Image 1 (cartoon, chains in turn blue, green, cyan, purple):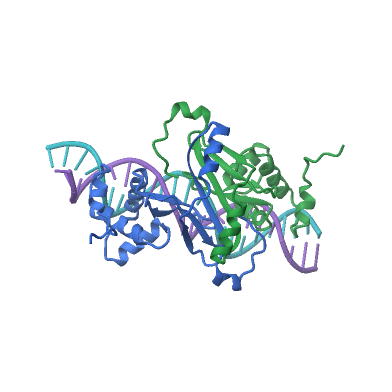
Image 2 (tube, chains in turn blue, purple, red, orange; image 1 turned 30 degrees about the vertical axis):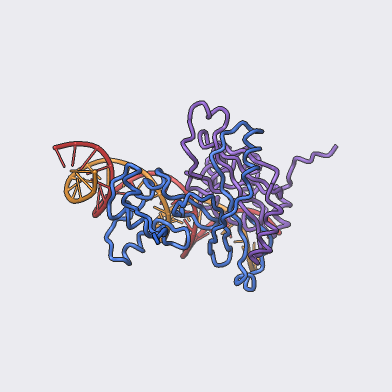
Length: 152
Length: 152
DNA sequence: TTGGATGCAAAAGTTTTGCACGGTT
DNA sequence: AACCGTGCAAAACTTTTGCATCCAA
């Protein structure tokens, strides 16, 4: 049985016209394995934890590059000024963000495909995509915090 | 006929337990009249244009305060690290963002109310709200730029 | 070999904070 | 008068950039 879970990041990079460097492979690995969307500085720290020497500016430049090639995606959540990154599995996903513990859960289903088509027709925009993130309190945090009304 | 278009920001502030200062009234005015979501620094510059002396840190602190009281809402868009603010009309709105000229159009209808209810049932989250922003190219920009595939 | 990738240092851009003073209630 | 709001300056935090050097193709 062939493993379907391994990404060959080296080929992945090359087929996108990028040089295959260890740093890029490491960064892709970290993002791909992260259970949560992750910020540049978190990636930098994770590399240090793994004993990899890298400069923070290289992390930023690498993220730019990977984003340009559509290998990763960006995300902003409320109350965090940093840009978060995710591995792009080419699935159309959305996020359920806990306002208490900040945990981010990926939602696979998208209820918006038809809506988008209609909007394109009405506005004459060329729709490129959308962001849809839902905010709330997870079962654990519901006990500790009472939502006093949505600010989202 | 009574004008429905005037907000009494002074009373608005007081009823939220805030002192009614000229700066706060001015900032609310600027945000309310802005056709686009607006960043802290843009508000600061607009005040200078109007001959109002204010410190940028006061703008930030005021925005924090107004956000805490639900008088304004926050928004982040792709490719802009700043936080943008909007007047909270207590309507449930979404945004159509042009990737070319960065124009932001407010969308009134929300197609997601039922979806949210179902999600709450399935996940046992207390849903507070959601963000839904659509990216594309407006009719004018469609001529000048070809969307090479969504990154959104 | 050559152009792209990286380290380093510095700067730019955004947001936050401590403290003293001033204004609203 | 009391407390909250504000200015000022400094710092914190995130991200970008110029340039010299290094490395993958």
